[in-house]
Image 1 (tube, one colour):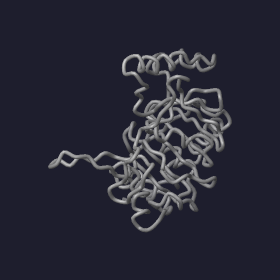
Image 2: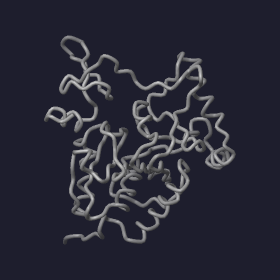
Image 3: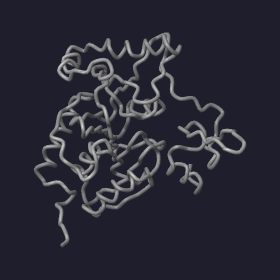
Length: 279
C-alpha cells in the first residue's frame, strides 16, 4: 500500500503555524520565538528544526540545496534532500547561486547569497546563555533585561585560560544592537557573513522548539572585547590543494605517510565550481 503525504509532508495548518512563528522572528531580529515543533521521520538533533522551516516555506517553483558541514553529499544532507524531493517534487541543486532555499548544518556557503535566497540553519542549542544558566525562565528574563554578563564572562574566562577567545564555533553575536544570539555551530569564519546579509537567514531548533531570524541588511556583530578583538580562523598563505582557492574556510588534510598537512575547501560545491572554470 502506497502512503500518500500532503505536499511538503506537513498538513497546511502546521505550515501556517510555523510560518507565523517565522514572521514574528523576522519582526524581532535575534529573538527566540517558541513554536510547536512537530514529530519528524528523522531523529531530533539531526536537523528537524531546519527541516520544519524548509517544509513550511518550500513551493513548487523553488530550487533546494542542502549542506552538511560543507558537503552536499553527506548522509544527513542526502536523506533530507530525499525526504523533501519525494514530498514536493522540487528541483535539487548543488549550485549555491541557483538555489532559492538553502538548508545548512554548520556552514554558510562561500559564495555570497542574494536577496532572492533564504538560508535556513539547523540549530542544536539556540540559547547563547545556556552554558552559564540552566533555567529557561531565567534566560528569558535576562534577555528581556538585556543582561548578558554571562556571555561576556564566558569569553573572559577563555581569555584568562587560553590567552584568547577560544570559541571554535557558535560564537555569540549581537543582532540589531539588541539580542545576543547563538548563530548555530558555524565556524567563526562564517560569522561576518551574517552582517548585512542580502538573504533572509532563518534558524530552527526542533528539539528546543525555537525559531529565530536575521532579516536582510541587519547589523550582526560578534561579541568581543576592545583589547581582544574578534578573529576568524586563520588560513593566511593557505591555498586549496584542489582548486587553488584562497581566503575561504578550509579543512586540514593530514597525509598519513608523510605526516604533512595540506588544505582543501570545506565548501565542496564552491571547490567544484572553481575546478570547472568558475570564479
